Amino acid sequence: MNRVQKMAWWTLTWAGIAFVSSGIAMTVMYFIKGFPAAYAGSAFLGLFGLAGLSPILFKKDPGRVGCDERDRLINHRAALAAFTTSYLVMGMACMIPFFVMGPNANISIIWGPLIFMAGGITCFVVHSVAILIQYGSDSRQETNA
Amino acid sequence: MTPVPEITNQIRRLRFENGEISQQTLADRAGVTRQTILAIEANKYSPSLALAFRIARAFNRTVEEVFQFAPSPDGS
Image: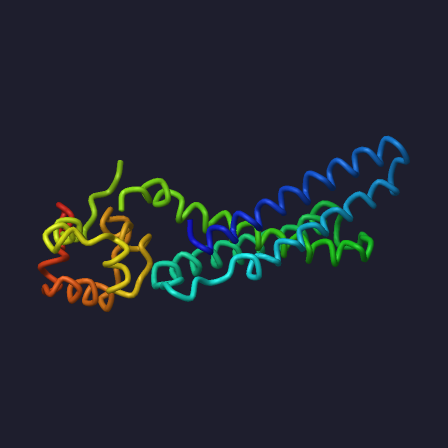
């Protein structure tokens, strides 16, 4: 497993922890205090920020080639998939309320940063998944050296 | 159905004919990672022209001795 794969797993791990913990917290708070207090449980999504530590934790190996043309191609495809998916998510988040609620409806301003955050999380998660899928089939053969 | 690869190679055979050099050694000589050599050997990745030349030079062979172009049956 190379550095990029480790970073992708790290990102997905913290995304999973953030979503599960915030889901549990919101559920528990819903049964104790109900909405809107239960929305405070979503603060656990902030744990996803720990995914940003991956460049510090997984340092480049100075002695060997860390990234070559195939790694760059995989990263390019993953980034393309990530930004495309993120764009679609943000587009749907903007357009679905328009079609469901109509052009004259009002929504709370809090949805602005929430949509932005959803787009960002989608981008990082899809990028990590796309990287692992593209490397996936090769890693099973790594003992054939 | 798995598509037939158009670019095939003799890297595995050449590695063993050249003193059974490891994938890592070949990767170091060609300036790539071992995973890339593994992917090329398995016909899962077609290298760039520059990398194909570097791999061929690592074996002191021409590119066409290492890589072969096998067009699909319909000639495309």
